Image (cartoon, rainbow, N blue to C red; front, top):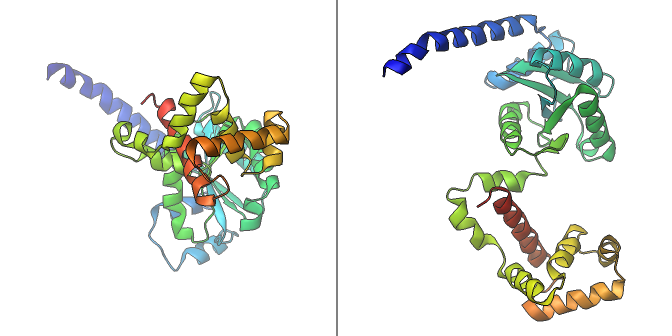
Amino acid sequence: MPRHLALLPKLGQLIAHIAVAQHVIEKQLSARDQLVNLLLDAPVDATWAAQFRLQHAKLPDACVIVQAIPTVDHDLGELRERMSYLAAPMFDQVLITLAHQKCLALISVSLKAYNSPHFHAQLEKLAVQAQCRLIVSHFYTDPAMTKPAAAVCERAAQLDLQQPVIFCEDVAFDLMLAQVQDGDTILPFFISPALQALSQYDTQMHSDFVKTLQAYLAATCNQVETASALFIHPNTLRNRLQRIHELTGLDLKDAQTCFKLAASYKVSAYLKAQQL
């Protein structure tokens, strides 16, 4: 159409500008920075370890890939510089690059350290100081998994969660839900009918059984922690759980039952957030 043809010159200028900018960015990256690009773009190669050694780095056999998203008006080049400066003292090895219009950091970390509160605290501090959000991939040990790990980070970024640090492992269920076709018609059937029955009972009787059950699951079925979180006496909690059992027949001491209920809460929250 004529109006589309009129837009083509402007589109051409835009594409050229992006291409030039990307070319300049890549030229500014050192050979060490581009080791991450090697893992993202090149097929598995026996020379990878040698190329890392050439740049005085170690091909990681335990790591995560982290996508940094600026929260202020910084371009990606400036964000990469801030990340490089701030992250270097925190981790044994961190390689930060710009690839595919994203700022990505490859952090070497052991499984034990990945699961430690200290590692989480380091990333929280890095996000605040670098003025960005961090999307952290699952822990992996095969460098060839860097590309799919980065792809999962990109999908997690699209969930529009606003926490400063998001671990893909923590939002795995949300990522799976986002892939379900016709979710508005299928996903409601994944919600336990017990939750719907309790919700109706709460509305009619002005009780708090849905809230109680959610707190119980969040506390990994620990009654002491649940009572503390709800600011109620443990005996009150026991009475509520017994009443929930009487109303629904659920065995709240069964691990599989608790898993299905927790999944139901996840599905319900997702549908509400998506206004489905």
